Image (cartoon, one colour):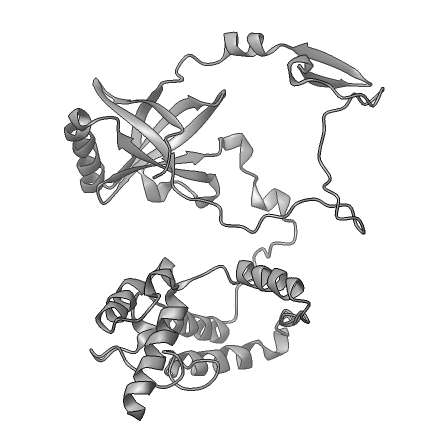
Length: 326
């Protein structure tokens, strides 16, 4: 169970909801240690005096604002605490907006909010339901870990979500930062029509469980291969940019390919390569991970609780082949 990293109250109007905050996501990236090449010795970062090279204790470190030319304004931790905003226990909603009005560039991190006790469940559920029915998100500010955040408060199912937002002056203007953006030139209608058809042909439902971090898997395979002294297989090179002359042909062939039944890289339907279906008219590739897991439970597939979606498809396909062969 995730550990709360903040607790306080949500206020909107004269209504107060005591809540606690937990991170909505966890990082699963492969972690590496820093080693000295050729020795295997750990390399550690240490705080040292730049002039003397001697280590400095944490209690002897203060913050300094760089004025340039080697001059600093020194600020003590106690001074920062005295001027910090006093709303460190309050998420104060100042208004409600349509979530679609907030541009994606403003979103930073996502957290879940839970009622701080059973006695607060009623008012918590009330806020959830009201936000869902109105399609609105509350805009608020609050202080966490000595920093003030602008946030959007929304409801998803029966859970309140808090999205930290960038401040307006933190979001860059793409027109100013990206001078190479095309301006004034409209696409050729024939190519635009092909692009629309390609988008329609490739349209699908949003199922996040269908995607996995393949790069992390390859990093783990690299580590395991090196541990066993095996050869490391290089990955594929990135594709070349589409030539403007060949754009229409590339679009046409893309539409044709996307309009065909989806196939696995090794041939056959995208259900593991043998045409095995889910038993209800759907191929395994069209089933969600939850449906695949339920099917694996029905067939008593060993190790299913530890499998990702691709592994479930492979296991169910193998089982189908064995039943067909027998």
